[in-house]
Figure (cartoon, rainbow, N blue to C red):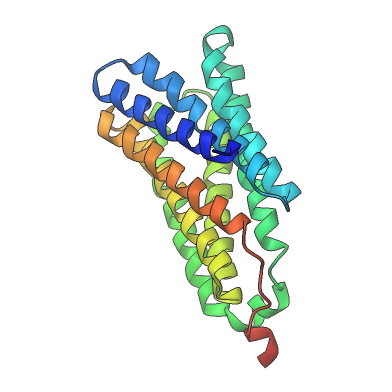
Length: 235
């Protein structure tokens, strides 16, 4: 059995232990096991994918560091833990956003997807507004509101760029990127509901499961080549 298969088995084991402890009321253990899932996913990528993307590597590193940071949150002040943890997530999503944008022709998108851009912009503004309304009563410091705003904007830019990339390229790689981004956004929205609306074990389990599913699609797309879009032949 090679190293990547062993790591995949470890990821599934850690995920299973997270679920068991989450639903058995051992929140601290569940929290710690959850923090280990994505670093092991990143390690699986490093060992099993030969042609690596630097931006995707940075995405995995920043995301994993934020997850691992949660394990030492008790020794950090609230402000440092909050700002550093969320900043790492924002940087992770920015790396993936930049990676996707680099594979899109801006001129082609502006020329052929005007209606899509208008609809996506309006939808993103509405979703950001709704998320900020949910978060606002629970935010005490001004910088927290700003961090949450930037976080949500970057997250939705990632989703929008992945959708436009799928429209543009229309191949399996772009589809996996879009589905992965969609799972990430759903995971984040459910996490907001878990943190600020109802502390239900099922919500946290679904959020983590969707994030893990997102990483599965990101991992699968990383092994595919980006075929030249047929649309470019028409222009």
